[in-house]
Length: 111
Image (cartoon, rainbow, N blue to C red; front, top):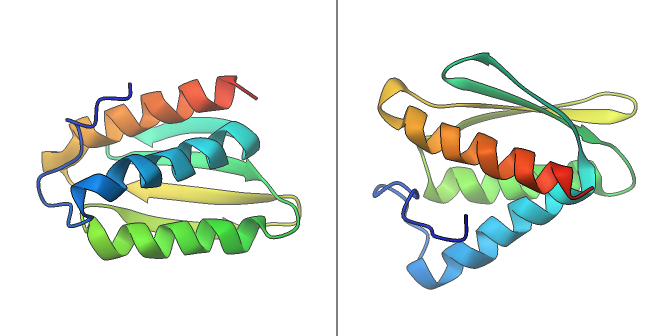
């Protein structure tokens, strides 16, 4: 899954920085993913184990990703021991969410 052809054309992150950003997300999911669900076809829900600095890390990634890839709508909801991250897209970008869900699941299995 290292091929980044799935990244949407509308992404404004410079091409040379994309593998680094994907690696940041993959590392977060590998370290912190506790559950993944797909409540609706256009909605991915991730639960990430909390801990010192995790909420800030998630919020930083979400902010940077929102700045370059407007197809995503992120909602981060911290709870006592976890951070729920909801990611939504429109119908046109469901294939991108499919790849993201597969990458997230694969990274989470490394845990």
